[in-house]
Length: 253
Length: 253
DNA sequence: GACTCGGCTTCCGCTCAACGGAAGACCAGG
DNA sequence: CCTGGTCTTCCGTTGAGCGGAAGCCGAGTC
Figure 1 (tube, chains in turn cyan, yellow, brown, blue):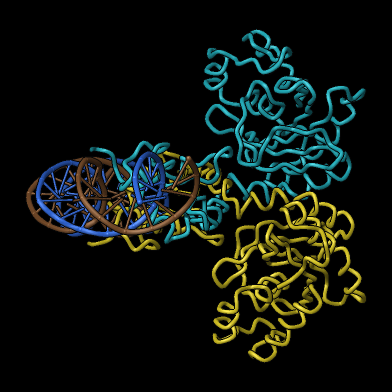
Figure 2 (cartoon, rainbow over the protein chains, first blue to last red):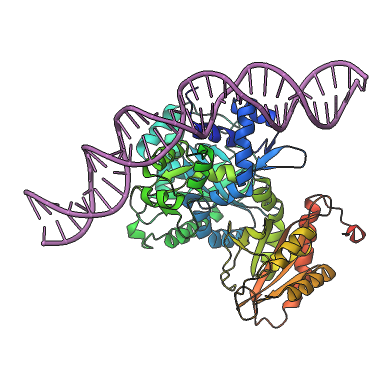
């Protein structure tokens, strides 16, 4: 004993994942590390409210009510809503994958992904998380993050995803400096070899970087740098919408 | 006393709304109808986990973690993800508002909205709810819903939103019959006078209608019926993606 | 600078909501 | 028909949760 009911409820809803969006009661009990009858009681209440739903086969899944509440997150759909017209434009112009992400802790969380039929397959999933050092948006978010977070990431082991992944602090430090200098990140084959992304910052009213967006194209794209101006422009457009002054001289650290 | 902690937690997170996405502790206490110290305790745990976030000014808002869990809802972003390529196509072709919605209880819940700059302003909000009888997607979802739900809606007072809103059971009954006959709904000036929507069903693997999509155009559009084929086609495309057999003869019930 | 007021934080004695093992129901598969 | 796994229900015990009160804090006013 000693654990609060609130903590248990959160463990239950956190038992679901992209790999396992539907779970039996027994699976929920195992994944939440809680006794069966406890989970049965908690799940019953959550299902009654709509936070969870029970399918015809008896399995539980996250319910629409929880999605609705989650949709009120200003750092989630709120930010996405402001960004959507620019993401749509970027998508229309490039016909490639367009993504929007925010920093959460020491990871990137994807808020949106627009994918054309002919675009390279990307592994990102709306609501999914990826590491900072191996994604374009992650490099942008880290480059403009608090020095403490940069030091924390640089001090930790950097996971290798492909032969091209940056794995040493020096490589990453140089990459971050280049992102700050250029105002964009170009991330080539870092998390998967076939994808190259061009990412730019989205600034909040006081100039702090609150999100990043990117276009993801095939690595063999001959002139990926051609995407830089439109990605930058989209980033500035979203920033303006969020209240950031549209003057180049206002861009400060 | 007598209320569970789970129920209280749900009351707290349900206190947020689209109108009030950020709340002080005192406001949360009032809206959740719980004592201040109780809310303080519960909110502390929710914030520690990330279900809520506390802004610099002390106000609370829904946190990214809750959005992430909500994003795992198969009836939410799961469905949206399958539909997105078709919604994007429809948007590219029409340059108008394109929406995706599901039925929840006796209301429509909007999963997605793509809006062009030149498109008519619509009041729908992703995560928001609207009535069945006064929206195109709502008419589709109701037309193919269980007879019990249809009877429930027809028996209840039908709220008037504009001078054009259908408010009698007979009007609605006839409209639903026409939707079933034509396979699409055309909803003109029902919830706001300036908007006309053309909506079509999205079917699940067994032919049941699991969602509806629509294009929303200005009411004065001279040939709104021209949108019918592309909306229908998009509906069929999404249905196919969800496993519904692509044979016209399979459309039954 | 002092005072007021509203919001927030902390405390703690009391009590009942929550606990979870056990028993039984149910159902699919062999 | 039997077996095994999943789910449901029960209930005596107990400590997590309760929430009013007191105090802290900061903004605004005089």
